[in-house]
Length: 152
Picture 1 (cartoon, rainbow, N blue to C red):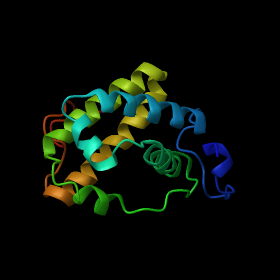
Picture 2: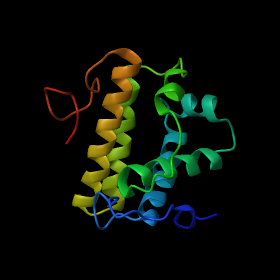
Picture 3: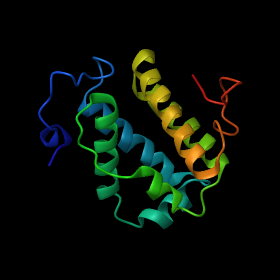
C-alpha cells in the first residue's frame, strides 16, 4: 500500500516539521539514498548482510520512520537503537559515511531548505545512535560543527 494511504489520521497537535515535506519526498529520498547505499563499498556490505536481497520491507519501514519523524504521523513502531546495536559490523566511522551520502542525496533531490531539514534530523538521529552504541558524542569524521562533529 502506498505510504500516503498508510498514514494515521492527523491529530491537531501533530504538525509536519516543514510544510514542503510530504510522503512523496520522503519516499523519493529513502529510495534514492538506499539505492546509493547498496552500491557503496563501505556501507553496502553491512546493509546487505543485515537486510539480504529483499529490500522492500526495509524501505517501507524506513519511510514509516521518516514519516513519523518529519510528518508526525506516528506510523513507525520500532526500536531503532536495539536494531542498530545488534549490527556488530557497524563502526563510528560508518555514521560519517552514512551522513555524507544522505546529505548528498537530500541536496540532489530537494531545494536547500527542505534538504537541510532532512540533514539536520539525520544528524540528530546519528548522534543518538552513536551515543547509544559507542558512547561517542557526535559523528566521527563528519564535517560540520566542530563541537559535536555534526553537519549543519
